[in-house]
Length: 272
Image (cartoon, rainbow, N blue to C red; front, side, top):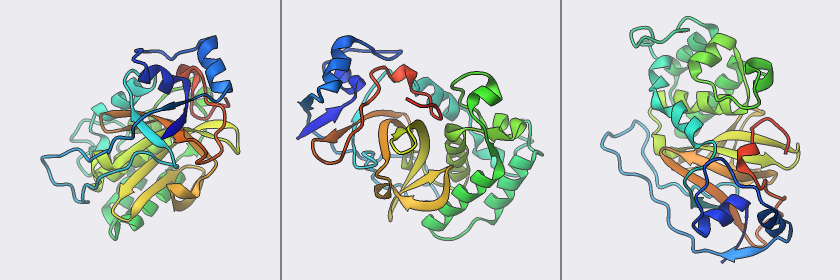
């Protein structure tokens, strides 16, 4: 199987460790020539958990949007993702919010989503649809420069509640924690940083892997669809639990836009 891969993928496969992204004329040239390298796809299994979640853990194929997911270390956004996960914000959407010591428990953002969580019921897809719509309606979209004065800030739910605004990865993080509060397992939720080839921007979405399929929770649409419906979305890197992935494509499987040579420059909501 032959794959068209981003520079980071090429570097990872030849054993070079990188922490802040890679940029070199040789790698950029390789991408422009659309060089391919052969790798073997590994089966991805769900991580065994000790506690049984309310919604069953399913084996997840993290190769979303028709890609191949390859385990990688040292991705530039990995630290931000782990910071987003290190505090249990599922409690923020429960009646125990203040007891847990969180601020902004009485904010419109928190109370709206807490009420939604309290009323949540139904099948898996209905829960996903509810989470997508409710978070999309609970805050205003503003890019990080407007809200934080920097090109890339991954906000916590408390920060989102205080500002009442956020950008695409903030919506994805809020949906992640809302679904965690409803019993969806950590390893069934994948935050994907991608290139929207139609709008020509970097973007972030949450993908939920359920028994009926993998569904995209996206701040640009209230419509819940399977990842296969998004031909314009080209994943670059993603995070699921403690796992980090870079993404490539089987040769000829789909049209592939030029991937960024330096992953440290990828900021969701900003153009390539």
